Image (cartoon, rainbow, N blue to C red; front, side, top):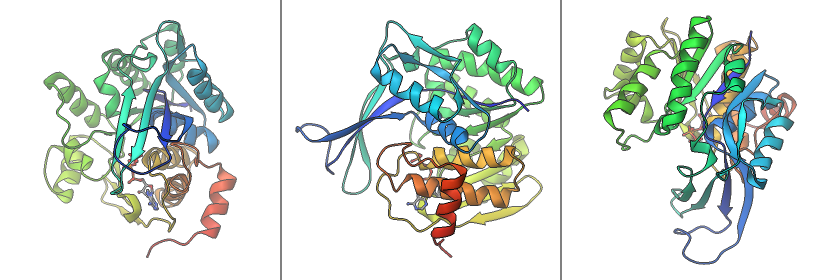
Amino acid sequence: LGPTVCVGEILVEIVATTVGNGFMEAQPLVGPFASGAPAIFISQCGRLGGSAAMIGAVGADDFGRVNLERLKGDGVDISAISIDPDYPTGSAFVRYRKDGSRDFVYNIATSAAARFGWSEGVSNLIGRAGHLHVMGSALSVPSACEVIDKAVDIVKARGGTLSVDPNIRKELKLDEATEQRFAQLVAKADLLLPSGEELERAAGVEGETSAIRRLFEIGVKEIVLKRGADGATYYSREGERVDAPAFIVSEIDPTGAGDCFGGAYLTCRRLGMSATDALIYAAAAGARNVTVVGPMEGAGTREQLDAFIAATERRS
Ligand code: ATP
C-alpha cells in the first residue's frame, strides 16, 4: 500500500497569550508553530507511524524551515513540498476571545501556500500514493484545485482511497464552480470527516439522519462525525454505528483537534484496526492536542497515545 498523501496549505501560526478581541493592542505572542490543517493532519499520520507524505509549498524562509523540519521529524515524506523563492510562507495570527471564538489575521492568498501546482515531485508521489486526504478549504486556492482534481483521478483509478474533511463553515458562500467541485469531491470520498454542521453542508440537506442517508446514496462509504468535547460517531454504509465518547481533558487550545483526530483515525484504519479501535486512538489524539498551546504541538506518537488512553477517563 502506498503512502497517505495530504494536499494543501502549510502555514505558521502565532498565538496571542492573552484572551480578548483582535490584535489592536501590543501583547505577548507565542510561536511560530508549524500549522495549516492539512499539515496538522499529516503530522499526526506520521507521528503514529503511518507512511505519510505532503503536497504543498513554503517560502524560502525560517517559517518554511519550521514546517519542513517538523514534518520531516514526524517521518513525513516532504519531497513534494516545493520551496517558493518569491513568496513567503503562509501565516496566521490567532487570538481567542472569552467565548472561545477566534480572531485571525491571515496571510495565505499572497503566500507560498496558495501558489503550488503540479510538478515532477507531485507526479512521482501521486504515482505511488495509496490514499489521498483533501480538505474543502483547499478548494479556495485555484492552483491547489488543479492538483487535487488530477491527484483524485489518478489515486482512485489505481484503486487507492480518498478521505475528505469538508473544513468549510456552514455560512461560507462558495462560488458556483467551487461549490460544484466540492460536491464532486464529497461524492468520491471513501471516508468523510465532517465536524458539526459541515455534515449538512456536505450533504446539502438538513438534519443529521437525512444528511447521513443522502451521503451514502451519493457514494460515500464511511462517515465519522466530529462533535468536539461531545465525542464522535462512526457510520458505515452497511448501517453500522459506533459512538466514540470524548476523553475528559481541560481544553487549552482547540485548534487542530479535528485534524489530529482525522489523521489518527485514518492511520489506524490503514494499519488494519477496526473502526471501534481506530476511534479510540482518534479521540485520544484530538483530546491530547487540545491540552497544549499550538495547532499540532499535542499530536501524539503511538506510545504517547497509549499512555494517554491508559491515564485518561472518557465521558459516559
Ligand atoms: P478543528 O477545526 O478545531 O481542528 P474540528 O471541529 O474539525 O476541530 P472537533 O470536533 O473539535 O473537530 O474535534 C475532533 C475530536 O477531537 C472530537 O470528536 C473529540 O474526540 C476530540 N476533542 C475535541 N475537543 C475536545 C475536548 N475539548 N475534549 C475532549 N476531546 C476533544
